[in-house]
Length: 133
Image (cartoon, one colour):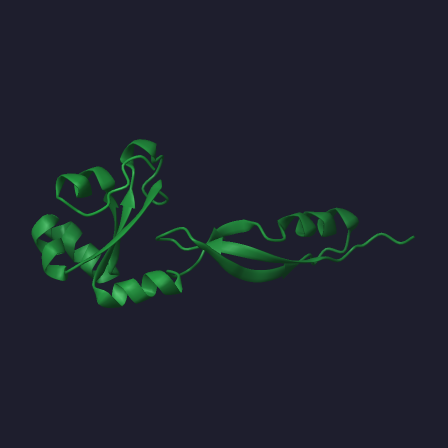
């Protein structure tokens, strides 16, 4: 019996803001060997990276205002992909300009979203802060 030298996989990508996953690209091996085909097969359904833009849910929230994504600072190893608490808040541009230093506020307003410490959100009275995420 002939071994499979070609495989195709549907992989997933994560939203760079909320980290929810969505179907991503379809990939296939271009080097026709059984080893490469098996590697592609193993990727089927797995998350391979971040999307280039926010997911549709985050984009809809960003149309309403500035999206803040709650993060747990003590569980975060890096600022690019921090540990998310599951919290999301939409705030006004005015809130951002009053709460962030001017340089940071401009960057957040321009981007339309930012990671935000759940501990700080709790101290500021934000609703339903998930401090135990």
